[in-house]
Image 1 (cartoon, one colour):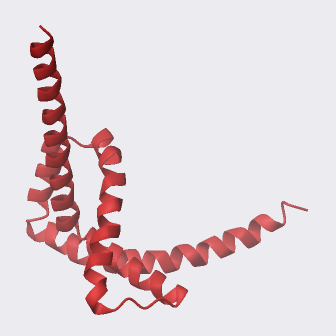
Image 2 (cartoon, one colour; image 1 turned 45 degrees about the vertical axis):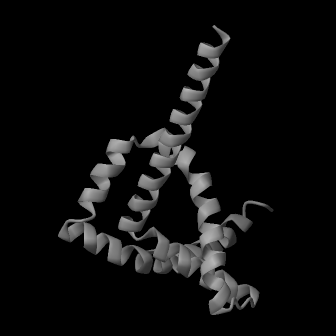
Image 3 (cartoon, one colour; image 1 turned 180 degrees about the horizontal axis):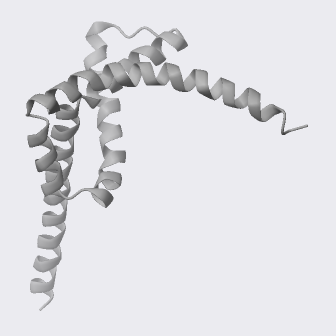
Length: 134
């Protein structure tokens, strides 16, 4: 009986791990199709510039893989709450269409422009809220 229970627990554990890896792989495909990695790379470059950090080309790939891997690990449970594997597969297919490809191409550009606009808006908002502190 203990042997059967142990086998059942191990099977459930490995299926869970395999399912998690499948979802993670789908999420990477989705984020790639969506153009998010280009946005993240631009963010890394921008942050590096702001901090005065220069990452040599020979180290950049390893660094990027490491930080992107940790980001994916953080995002998997978030996405799992909102999207099934089928949802991700459907979205990936959508990004293969002409409009999907355009969205994917424009996402990093829009994200960068939005970041600048959001920073400006945040400063204006902060100034306007100051009068309520008095």
